[in-house]
Image (cartoon, rainbow, N blue to C red; front, side, top):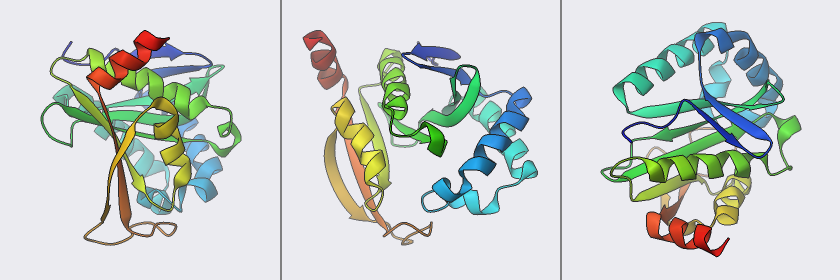
Length: 188
């Protein structure tokens, strides 16, 4: 498969490709999550309606170019966050990004959504590893990777330093290979 499915279901979350019709729901989710996002997401500082339109347009372009596959995370038909599979770590790999509305954290929903991306990513042609990157000051992102069986492979200073207020400028990289995933899923 060259590109992932446009919708994925996993546990209590549904992932579906972002659409321009999601503008109001995404804008609301971001507005309600700004205090939660600003420490980690540089784009959150410039949030507004036009940047949200720009994101949805860019998401469509990325999907069509097969560079990135961006999904709304929904629960009970409500947008509770965003996640993606991105082709920016070189041949054979995809990196995974995610964020959740603060009212949806602490219930395993980020892990559930990310597990759906992992399953889908390893079904794509030529993908043999997946990575999750986060700043060292954001242990919640690392906890998702750890729960799913990713292995921390490095911590490196970010050349430009911290890019968001909560960051310390140390990039933590977690990796999972297709063999690791297959062994994990075979165990049950």
